[in-house]
Length: 341
Image (cartoon, rainbow, N blue to C red; front, side):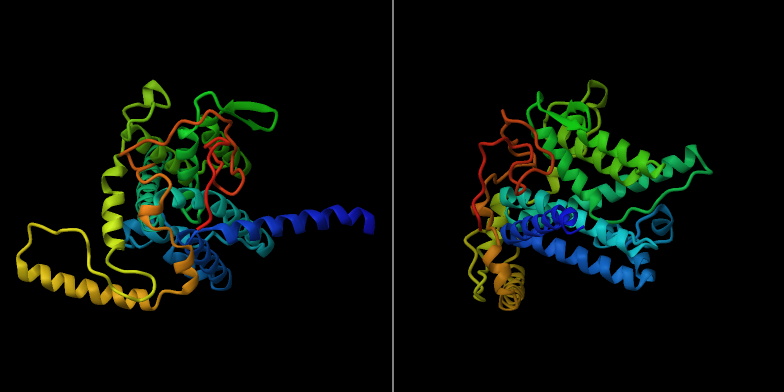
C-alpha cells in the first residue's frame, strides 16, 4: 500500500512546489486578483447567501443590481460538495497564476489592472445579452449565473491563442486542432460535461475575438469578421499610465508629475492636483512592501501596447502551449523569456 501511494504523494508535492514557484514569480496585480478571488470564494462557502452580490444574471441586472457586472469574478460558485468547490478554486488559482502574470509583465501592473476591469465588465455585458437571447429563443431553458475567474481567464487565453502562429496546433485528447479554435473546443467540452451550454465562457470567447478583430487582427473566420468591439479605445496607454505612476513612488513620497496638463482653468488644475497629491500620498504610505516589490511600472513592461490595439504582439514561430510554463510561454513560443520583477 505504501509503495502504491508513493507516486500520488510525489504528484501532490510536485503540484504544491509548482504552485509555490508560480506564486513567487507572480507580479503584484496577479497576486491581488488571486487573493481576492480565494478570499471571496472561501467566504461564499461559509456564507452561501453572499453569492447574491457576485452572481451575475439577467434577473439581477433586471432588478437594478449591476454590481455583479464588475464583481462576478470574486467568487466561484459553491456546491454542496466542499471538496469539489476547493478543487475548482485550486484549478482557477493555478490557471490565473499562469495566465495573468504574462499579460501583466507585458502591460505593467496599472495597465493590466485596468484591462482586467474593462475585460470583466465587457464579458459580463456580453453574457447578459446571450442569456436574454437564449431565453427569447428557448423560454423554458435555464441559465446558469456567471461567476468565478474562468470567464476572464478564457478571454485572456483566447487572446493569447489568437496571437499565436496560425499554424500552431494543440492536442485535445487524441485530436489535433488549430490553436485559435482551441478555446471554443474547450467550451464545447465543458458544456458537454455539464450537459448545458456555458454561456459565460461563450461570451468571453466572443468578446475576445471581437476585440481581436477591432485591433486589426486576422479574422478567425470570414463570416465572423464583422464582430468587433474596440476595447483598446478605453485602455490606458503606456504613456498615460507612466504619467500617473510618475506622480507617486512606492516609498511613500508623492512626486510632481512630469506630464503637462492642458485645457483646464488654472484654479481647477491646482485644486485637482492638490487632491490627487493627497490621495496618492495616502495610497503610497499604506501600500504593503510586498506589493511594491512586485509592482511592474508601465515603463518596464515588456510589450507596452500589446493586446491594446496600438501595436500587435509579435507572431510566434514556436508551438502553442496551453497554460504552459510560468505563464510567459503561452502562445509566445520558446524565444520569449520574462524577467522576474
